[in-house]
Image 1 (cartoon, rainbow, N blue to C red):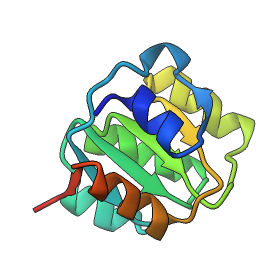
Image 2 (cartoon, rainbow, N blue to C red):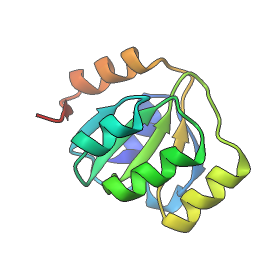
Image 3 (tube, one colour):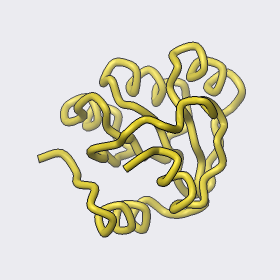
Length: 114
């Protein structure tokens, strides 16, 4: 599923990487625990989290995920967004809760890490 489709489906606002929404997402990893994401994430995944500090983008970069969606309407500060732009990681925000996001994406055929 294209990130642009996910953006519309989850009512997301793009904070960084507006030109990178054509990336194809194959799997999803969702957690507020960055160590869990590092342990289980695979490249080309979508990362869903409520943790908005700079560590979330560092984790996404190290794990090689394709994009980050912040849930529950949480917004990172400018420093985090600038770092995501530097690392070329699209960042989106949605008012939806993590549970609903995962259910919606699962029903559309996306899977978690197995």
